[in-house]
Image 1 (spheres, rainbow, N blue to C red):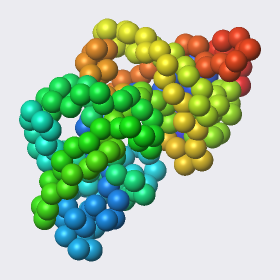
Image 2: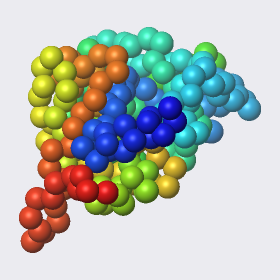
Image 3: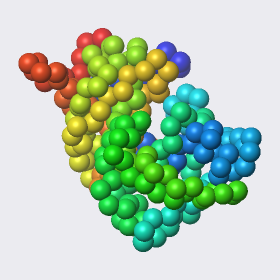
Image 4: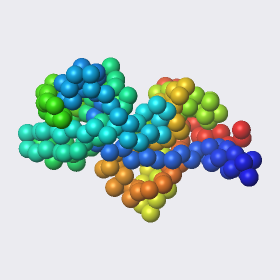
Length: 220
């Protein structure tokens, strides 16, 4: 049975298939901001571990305040990071009255938006760090190597749903400890009618300047 499962997994990978997860609004915090929001020496307490190794949904929640509204019970993801970041969909931004929020890769926070965050013990004004996350693929190094994917590639992915839209410009992130997943936000999920277990298929791999489009190598 294990051999059959492994064979199926390998065929799925060879066909460029990947599980697509929907990433809801959430916050990443530094130790300093964590203590301002939840008290001195406060710690994040894991509620559920995520597909990316070592990352978890914390039991702690925050409230976000914008010029026109608020969002309560917003998830905090762990572990703590070296930068504070708030990831919102465009619909979330509209609810809060935030304008000009850039679509960015995680960690690229230059000229990003500001917001007020409230926790159980305090409130802070985050001067920057609010982004809409660019849709992306997390690729373990061994899978990326088999498929010819490179860090920073931009690929096209067809959603295998009742509304099979094709997402262009999906960024590939290759890492030693990555889980093989594609992440989109709720606006993108709604556009593709994605819910529950959802697969996407990489149609055409990214290319660098002077290269032709690359397709998944089904020969390995």
